[in-house]
Length: 184
Image (cartoon, rainbow, N blue to C red; front, side, top):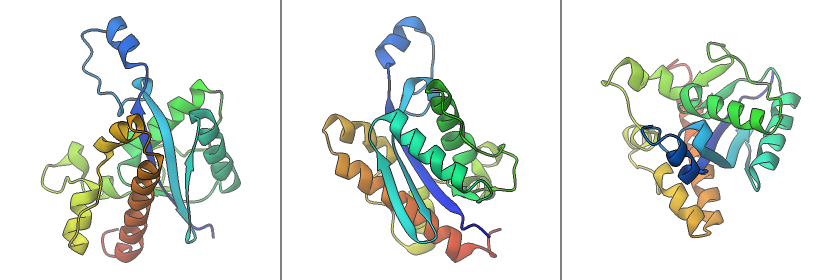
């Protein structure tokens, strides 16, 4: 049986000025919408091996596509991956002509911790961020927030982005392994 691929992506605004000119009434948020965001990192943990892929977006997506192709039956685990990570990387990869072997969002091969807890689309009772969930389960929040990534990028803090992505992957890995059989 394949080890699950626990992953997280980091994005920054892309072509925002052009987009705002073309669509001045749009309320889309830069950094969290596929057509005005760019992937700057994909971190993953598989079988205890952890890596954060960084570089040009196309190269990041190609390397992740190779991983997915090599492990086509692996369960994909993340936090809000059904509504954010998977749709965003699918569209960004398509822009570069890259085929991603990603299951449909209804597939049993996707374990979305956010979705399992109810997600913000289902109820506000259990909706929380990854940092809040980590605080609740383990007593501490995270050091950084996804909202910090664009500023880190502007400041050239690639190590900060790498560290943030690795931390999110490790937290997701811990929650997935520590609460498997309890929460799902």
